[in-house]
Image 1 (cartoon, rainbow, N blue to C red):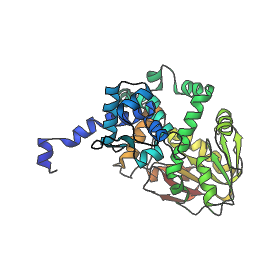
Image 2: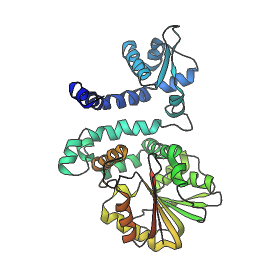
Image 3: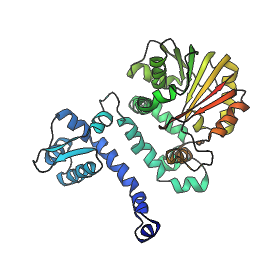
Image 4: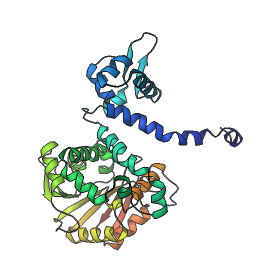
Length: 343
């Protein structure tokens, strides 16, 4: 569309205005169990059948299903009246029982992130996290509530783990990590990224350091690898074990510069000579013009944490100020990128 045509009919603005509708359609279909039911039935089903099984109105369900068809999340044969069924991508990523499911990520987005973003204007005005306004509690109180609820904890861990099923291989293979035999994954939750490392470099052994309740839930509810060991601890306040390589995935972007430096310097002291730290985050362009996914992530950090996404040079400075040298940056083209700094 030419510039004059855009001024006559601003399609791009209308698409942006409706963007959150699209997200909510997918979230709602997940939450109601549409994709799970169609997977279970193993054959196309009518809107009436789906509505009855999921205890919804027929009219509301039919509209939702048709919207999902439009979004290519479902397919339907109206001519032969064969009903609705999942597309391949929905069967792989939106069915809860699928090994590669993103269902828990969708639930976290709709139940937590979506709620916080209703206060995005206030976040920009105030320059701070909006958990307290969104939920009536501070972010620390929210996380403590998650830790007290085993069900919420498991959902959160699944959501964090699911990302590495679709882009973990890319960040692990961004650099040759075969020389590192002992690895410590700081705040590694379930070990989802560690599993990718072990499958790539079979001789590596990994220690996951995370909070006690996270590790207890991971051991109880998720399959763990025998080459993965867990260490309960608070990485800001407890000793960090000696290792050849430290992985920090989606950790640095949560915190202020001061806290990032404190943690990186602590890791540098524990790192063996010749060792390294691998930071996995969503990189901004140097001029901060994109990519749009990283810009949105950075705004989400504003709404939900005290951190932000950063440029390669900003990560390089954090690492060099902490003592690391020979910094390398790799953009993967996926959701997360990789930065390696050596001791």
